[in-house]
Length: 117
Length: 110
Image (cartoon, rainbow over all chains, first blue to last red; front, top):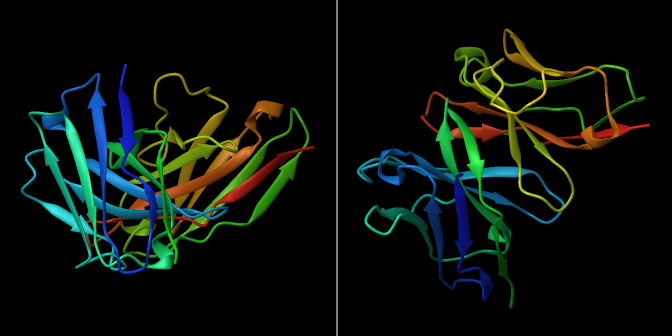
């Protein structure tokens, strides 16, 4: 069974940084594209970033380009999202998800990021 | 990377059918057969219901079906059940090799 567990969320001031982690199990992590998705309180889903299995190819939403960095450690079955220069609009629950058929197939339960002074 | 357009809400009675639309552009929905649909009951993570326009993952009831015409995709739920009440989101691959979601549709089972 696929299992994704996010962590690293919390309260941070505008301009601050956080690193999110997503530990994966139940599938061959190194072969899997992975995504991060954000959801503001009471709002819709916003795609954030994607990384190929070998970590060499990454893509970002325009709203986070230059501020966020997606990475992975296949030896630890862990996906990361380094978030710098955080803004109030970055607030929300961050989900990691696997890729399948160009969709987001399996989702974690999310970790909450709050950007506020 | 504008969000795909969905109706904010739809409603129907148990046993009836309902269809949710998702409109994009030729750079996303219309350009690829890579549209997906997600179900999100309150307080839970999204769940994949349809991928590549019309394919159901294992375990998803065949009451759920997907289709596409031009730049608009559709999710149809037939034989509505109370447990289907949730927010539904469409998603698409884009020509920029990114993904984009719709704004979400709240389904109310009357």
